[in-house]
Length: 553
Image 1 (spheres, helix red, strand yellow):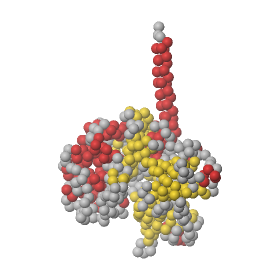
Image 2 (cartoon, rainbow, N blue to C red):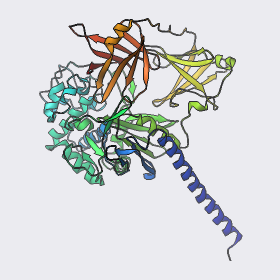
Image 3 (cartoon, rainbow, N blue to C red):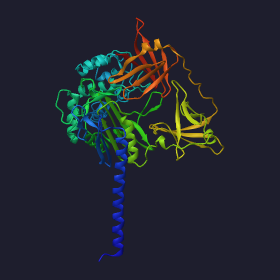
Image 4 (cartoon, helix red, strand yellow):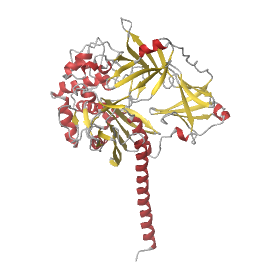
């Protein structure tokens, strides 16, 4: 007969196991609800996996792998992973460094002697963390014309090597695919083998990534998910892209399970020492000492106070994102077969649910009294001379950051005292110091930043002008910002609208006859004329970047 103490112990154990099962079921339902609200069963879909301590706790697929054949998505589907490829390239470089075959401080001319550096010192480090200043070939006008052309790495380098540099090495961070093309070629120079073979033999085969490949349009790849694009409200097959062009910057293909094997191997230091990994995942520094979040193939991230590293990918017909939260030992990987949804936002929401700290939703916002809202109105000074203003308009609070293309964003009061932006991933927490001064903590995926209340008037609101409808009609058309990403300009009456691929249509407002601004995001669009006086392109000015887009229709 069992003792009463033994029965109590058994009951406690049973209750513990039951609570774990209930929590797992609850989490599964919560994740299901998030993903099914974004990915329809009749549209291109997503394969998503969540792993805790290296083991899957959630693995599902939603939507279609092939629309024409009406084939449902499964977690065995193979996707082009785009720029997640950069993780593999970075680790390959660090493997060669640990073998004594190169140093990240080596100048690139040591391995590519004829590369025109124009008396600049460009190192492998600069290529890895996007600070080289080399022109990114995917942003050049010629890239679209080359999309169907098979090229060797050397031929691809010839496309951009003579372009003027954007800045001196180490002066700025600017995401750059050309740098990773050069890294792939350096791997070939050192090993005497192709990049494809090196990754296949030294990574894929080593850890059993049996459903991972260097991309090919010709080979038969079992369970390949077809890629799509969204134009307006219509799905189309993704444009053709020779897989020789993304190369070491974006040509790999994989599955969610294989990428979990990859993350587990990275975490276990199977390929590189922890010391090398620390450099890859913990950001880096510009010449002036300013920290940037990008390291080597990964960027630092923060989700609901949990820190880790991540990387996304976007390539013709596919978008991807992978997140690893270190202290929680949690990995989330999402692979999609369309350019039409924000997979990064989806994986962030799923990761937040998995750690028990769901990202708040503005639909749960509470209403503040005007008097309560007024307490936080004013300017806040942050490190690096960043100033943000909180303003009250029609009983609603708005945030605006000083600087180029500054725009207002509504913030919403939540029950926990925070104020969130639309997507819930950015927030303020306001408080008063002992002497009654305003202060705030501003949080986003890059970290937490303390702002101190100062006396300063907010920037003047931009004024729009009226432009005649016959002039607006000249701007109508489709403009290609980058492969598979189109800005569609339309006119309705006396109003003009811009709609980017996979995004809603927004009205744009004229600051001059050719310069327009958006109110929903901090961005400007200028329309450009050719020598014949016809509009042949536009330039999107956003986040400090000038991005040209050719008119294609």
